[in-house]
Length: 608
Ligand code: ACM
Ligand code: ZN
Image (cartoon, rainbow, N blue to C red):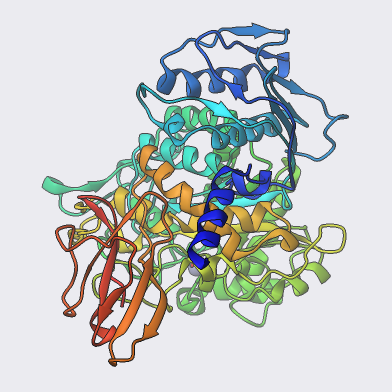
């Protein structure tokens, strides 16, 4: 009887239509999803794309996204309805970046509050289609079908950011485009471009050519390493990002983390000594000597050229981790402190921030910086702090009229490994590991914008583990040792958790539900060519048998993946036995090891 009932339940579960929430695995989770009556929408070779004038760029992107994997043309119909219609209507959809998507047999309509909203509606539409839609070449034999559905959606926070450190390791323009694509797939919208550090100056500044002629390169002449973005490269990236709803915010670091500029122009520092661009990670004690007019002019010129290039209303001035010893022993800097009535040397940074924030305000820009920018004395112009240490200081910021972005090192720094294990890839070690669940559950107070000054959240991807010249270990999980793959491995899947943290309201966020949806995203990321970290299997059930042995049931958080295992404590490989779903009988549960297997060359770390 029990068997019959469970068979019936199984049949019911298989043939009853799933509710819309169950059939939709959208990340980040939308505000509302409603299943509609009627027949499915199916993409065919006759499908057309109609669009409003304001959504022309988004229509082209949709056309390109659909054409590659289907092999069909998807003709564009400007100013007309199509089988898929893109519209901008700020009255019908009231929230900034919000959208409404309605799909049914008669077509798909995507209405955005603005161009970004249309773009996000398209991302949701793509997530509703089979995973093959993210492939870069034609996929045959796929039925491109969507159940009738209505999605109404808008982000919780206006700032959903990622920082990428291109100073420690120079990523090619093509990788930055891929990075923008990865952000855009998950509706992230602010890219903090960490262009400058001790180990490299990556932005062409025409007035100071040595910054990139000299400051972009490390190591001996015959095998120098590094690189930089020309202003032409930057314009190309800006256009690419803008079409995808991503705002690039340049970060020009000072007064510390700027040795690369001091190598190019030694007069920028207090002591004027010749140094070398770093090939190994450490924080240089050299600071810009802010007492010199030439240095202040340099800063003014560099920022002017930077804002002429980047249209963002924000300009990031870094400001983290200055050690003030050089200013303490510099007679000119000491004299400046006296003139300005500053008692602590750290206040000289506050003095500098005040001046620069004023310059930027005159140009209609707002200064952003690491939290240090408003922790070194009162800044009279409103600025934005990226709170990487002490999230509670958002309150201090608010009292002083500033705004903040939540980016705690403990939860949102993706240069830390997900797990502390010698088989894990080379990653930062100065803080504990940051597992996916920890990122997902980053504690956020209810910062609704009406009552708080928090703009949103940001993940940070530092590259100091991959600084030029560092030999990277082979990555068995990926069969690779290139820094780009390290970056993707460390960013994914945590970037998707960040996405939901920024987009989805607190009441709608739940790790178990996210994990269920995420299961279907891993195979999708594989199709998209992203070299992500596979999660380990878990022991779902452990039962003690009467003979003293144990029966263990395994599960993996990844749809379409296999589990391979050993029972003698050795490390499983692709060639170990494959788990078939029936419990495994072992004398000692400690001896069971299992891995998630996506393909011969893409496997997870073993369970502990
Ligand atoms: C930082 O991690 N130094 C902002
Ligand atoms: Zn000085």
